[in-house]
Image 1 (cartoon, rainbow, N blue to C red):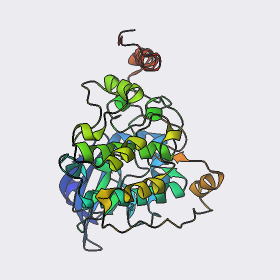
Image 2: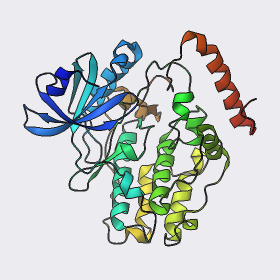
Image 3: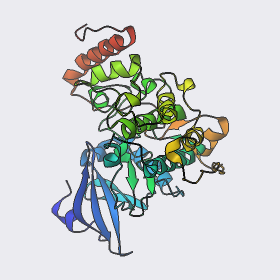
Image 4: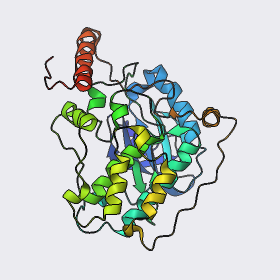
Length: 347
């Protein structure tokens, strides 16, 4: 939480007046930008992160990049800085909240308005991917709605865990794998198809009012994500069209190569579904990645970087030194269980 002085004013410019979101490593506040006289959202990161050298370098690089985004369906960072022992970002305030409530209906035909939102998610993702970037943490909380209903993909490149290191899967990430693709769970190379998988899970929710796999433990959920075919959405909502059901299941193929190649292809498939009748067709995006950035160079080579951490796949809450060896052994056993298909958590 911010100090008492930060609750009054941050950098003598932003008045933080309401906590609107909480996460493991950051809180989000509605605030007033006293200089521009407009309402904004301020995301203030945990003070512990200021001592994490990797986070600081990552934050500065990605926040600077996020300030360059210029697309109607990608949430832009307006400014960033450091105050009261914590790093922060400032972005436009999305009055409509996130798309979570939109996905919870799960009965009757999927509204055209919901299909429009997903077309806009695809447009934002196409822009991100065109720049050689991946989101890698796409979920309902990271898709926001403005007052006019416009959807924006948020938190591109600004996710991090306290004390992260070289491990790919820990207790921390196991608790957040709901929207992870199978290759993400296994710590394998990611691609635009990994983001498509996350969109597919959100589409599944919009159709069925629930996720395909519901388990009490993260490890059990990971196993099902890796092994089991999702039940068809029409199992839970027969009013979903067969065409839309096939689009959803195509997004959720276990192999990245079997999914849609990118967000544009997914948007085109959604546009052909009966639920999209009456919506304008989304035209092919025309954009060139910047040549003077790491992202542009990566796109030119056909490579993609995970913007949540461009140097390596890593989400770790570092344990105490005394617990580290035990945690490592436990993770290795759990990963082995996932790979070989053992049902014994105590191997």
